[in-house]
Image (cartoon, rainbow, N blue to C red):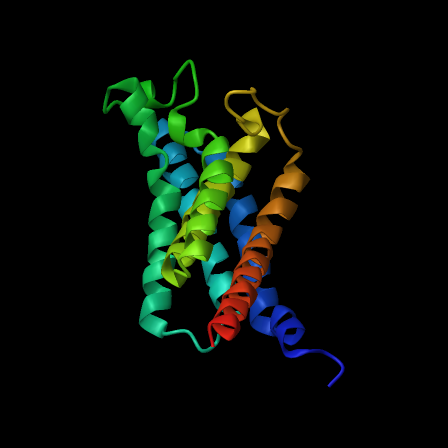
Length: 207
């Protein structure tokens, strides 16, 4: 075969369909938010779009591992979906109110919207997982990274990435947001593959 197995997985029809669906969800979700008349509907559509993008992104990652346990995969997709949505709870915590109006009219960004968090936490968790050869810690750290990075990338079209304590980047162009969102699952797959290779090396050395 001209294509290796990993590359064939990368180019599989299911990957193409789901990646296209991911792009459609990103665009259609924003259209629904933009044209919703009621504030509560805008908030619901906005948060639901975050959640679906996170879940679809992890599903695409999982499709590269066809020997995975189906129930574990489903739980991970649900976890990534939930985290992508629950990140917005910090709006209410910072507002110290259950009012949607208060939560969406903050003077400053709430803490879980700092992109510094996943950028710093993920390498630390990776290092711990590598040192102790803990595959589950590595996998769940990537789930959290996927949820946070997809959420922050979507928000970055309005206010940029918040790289605390250095400030924020300029807002990213909309087409960049869509392209980055489509690329994230394959970035995560690459990170998993690197860790898997390192884990195999450790096992060979131990033998």
